[in-house]
Image 1 (cartoon, rainbow, N blue to C red):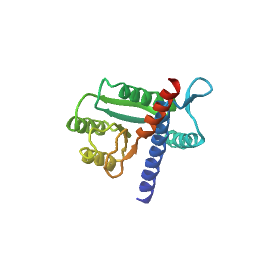
Image 2 (spheres, rainbow, N blue to C red):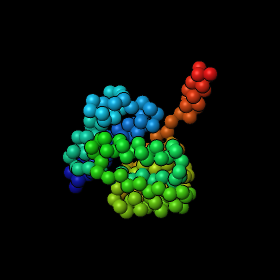
Image 3 (cartoon, one colour):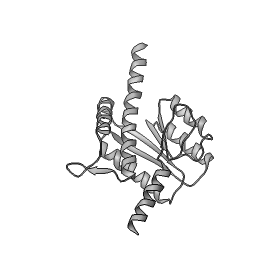
Image 4 (spheres, rainbow, N blue to C red):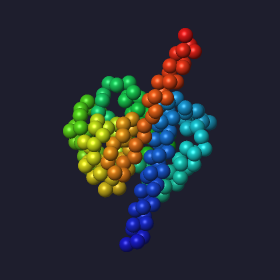
Length: 185
């Protein structure tokens, strides 16, 4: 029994390393900080990202490729389209992901709950979502986590225990943009 628990913990750690590496790469790609690597593939800048991805590759090699589910509830928005494109590109570049399942539709929390339940039933290893509600998705997010699925909210925080949140500093983005505009004019 202890061996099974240890294997489960190691599998979850491998998944976490993979998704933190992928999300770091996604964040860098979206912010324009990805430098071309030898051979034309994109590689995140910085030693920490490389170490995280190396650890993820070791875990993924031992258990096969991953399936990532993406829940997007705002179709037609340029940022969201870029987000999905970046997730797919980084998943392909990593060599660790077999499939990216994207659920793409306009909707609110009710629709996103149904989409997340669908991703859970498809057996994805992780879910990346841009949440429609900070608290309204907690039950389905916690159900996914209970099944060993890594859940990462991007752009907006969620309050579900065990979910990971990746956001950026909008104030800093505004300052950088204003400084660029001031210098350009």
